[in-house]
Length: 97
Image (cartoon, rainbow, N blue to C red; front, side, top):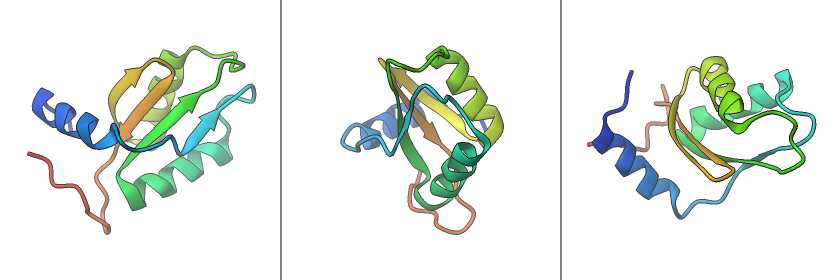
């Protein structure tokens, strides 16, 4: 599923008021971390992840890895914040335009 520009704008507006649920630090992406993100994406569909300054990896490569590992869509990278969306199978709470 590829998000259209209108859908991304809508998701960005929803994510604007949310706080980051996860922080990526010097340990980077681990298998346990990715599993936790998958679980939360299934429940919430839209999450924000903050990349801390002590993280050794580039935020663009982190975002790409997260999209590939979680089968989600990248909504936005703003500063050090990554916004991801994945349509839930059971807990569908966001209706895209």
